[in-house]
Length: 145
Image 1 (spheres, one colour):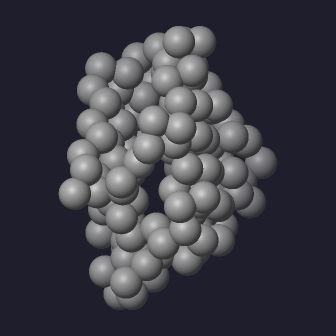
Image 2: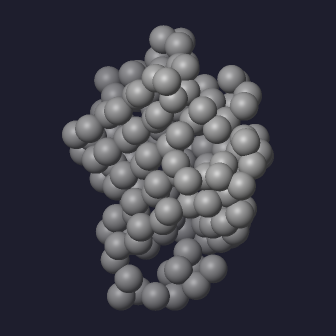
């Protein structure tokens, strides 16, 4: 809550290695914040999530997608996710779609591992790229497996 609430104005960069037991805490703090995070850059590695259980709860994944669409994570610089840990195909598609719909002006790296994504799943992301919603994107990784 201290970081997400902007009570540390000197903090410019934050790297979050998210484990499933911390997902709810992190998303809750960002959601409660009155404004988008006041950071120059936020790096989120979501690949460690799901280590405690075989799949991530749908609510947590939807929470992340909602924060993106609300503009609360506009400082996101990099995001890595192992979406094979998301059981629901619809929720996987929602997560990828959120990146295409959100305006993320500093996002440079975006990666999805092992999700068995279809062309239909990634079309909202492609449309977002065409609309320049991710103007700083330099590296897009979609790894099957």
